[in-house]
Amino acid sequence: MSRFYITTSIPYANSIPHIGFAMEAIQTDCLARYHRMIGDDTYFLTGTDEHGMKIADTAKEKGKTEQEHVDEIVALNKDLKKILNLSYDDFIRTTSDRHKRGAQKLWKKLAEAGDIYKDRYDGFYCSGCEAYVTEKDLVNGNCPIHKRPVHTFSEENYFFRLSKYSDKIQELIESDTLKIVPEFRKREFLNVVRDGLTDVSFSRPKDALTWGIPVPDDSSQTMYVWCDALSNYITALDYENNGELFQKYWPADVHVIGKDITRFHAGIWIGMLISAGLEIPGNIYVHGFITSGGHKMSKSLDNVVSPMDVAKKYGTDALRYYLLREIPTTGDGDFTYERFEELYNGELANNIGNLVNRVLAMTDRYFEGKIPQINERDEGLILRVEKFWEIYHTQMNDFNLKKAIEEIMFRADDANQYIEENKPWALAKEDEKKLADVLYNLLEMLRHIGYAMYPFMPGISEKILAALSCKPLIKDVSIIEKWGVLHADDSITKCDQLFPRPD
Ligand SMILES: [Zn+2]
Image (tube, rainbow, N blue to C red; front, side):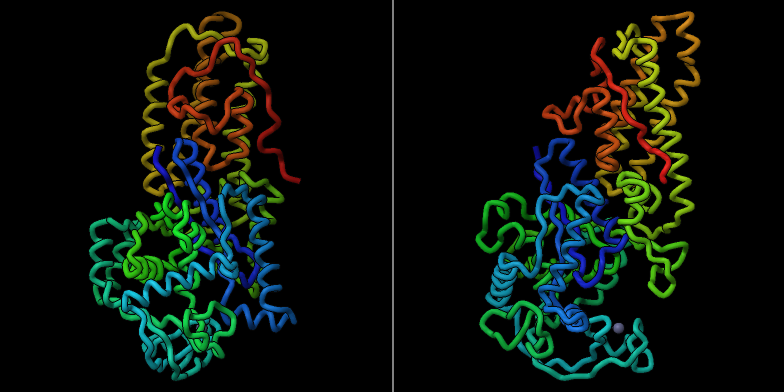
């Protein structure tokens, strides 16, 4: 059994959770459930990034303390666990004491390595981006994103000597020791690294960044986001005390992130880990963004899609299906209710839902709800199922979730076609032995589909498997993909309609 540690990024706790993060959390959950299902000792972390001036400013506008403000947002983020059926093991908050102490320990390690130094920083800062803007990015003196003037300032900062690790980072990525998926994101980042990574501002004076973690041994400075937020991946494992979780699960197998923060993870974070003498993660999986009806979601366009609303109307699994099946796993995708309903009615209700209903109903009708005795194996069918598992595992391990779920839908198509070709209703009149074989094969197909679906639509999977008296998480995982596991004479139970018409 191998161990598998996977993380989401930590969303900024300044506004309600958006569908882009819901997708990231579901992708991560899908992989975590997959690894649990195949028997890996899996640990899944998510959390929230709760410091910074934007949060301090919003809290002030709302007449609240910073802590009150982030507590409210964090509660909404935690609601996602139930709404999206997330199976995470831990939720790290960057305002927690365990995190603050861990981040400070990491800072000290970087300082001990000689990689933190104080210098004057002359620069531009956009309060909208809450980020330093370089001179070459400015458009007529304005922030290119917010189209408004940036602040110029000169202040003392601590810097992290990222330049020292630029070559090493390049080598790690080129050799796939640190694998960035998809390949085009890897190439994109390598183009940046080849120019050489520069040192990064790592702190701000306390009066400019009031809400954050103090720099160890210098309370006049506050950590900037890098050491504060990126460190969550280890502080949650009790890096502070070099605890059991840290020893067991670090380095991470996969960081799942959005395309906008690839540089921070593949560059700054890896540099920090090397400097602190820590192992580096195996993979960074990068997803794209979701538009709404072809446009960037924005309040002014009134096209913001709330993951909560969609889940409430169509159910958690249907939302998960849309985000995993319709949105390209590593590319950009679009959300529309029209497309959602098309998939819901077509692929879910008609394909999967009908298949399950028909097979269970026919077993009920022709065999009194008992699994029939098989007489002759269908080798062609078994071969197709074996081939399916091979492809499925490959896609799951390549972060090709969309391809994997499409393969599951092909299995459902195949099963539906098998019904049409074999016409059990006709066999019932003329060939009982053949009818038994056909029904047995269909029930086995449902079992395989039920398992393969577990990472994607855990609720639906559990219903299908329960009808066959199977469970998704079993001790002997080899049973999952073996053909012919169902026992003759065991009872099946019917299940509720899997995809009812939404109100
Ligand atoms: Zn800006």
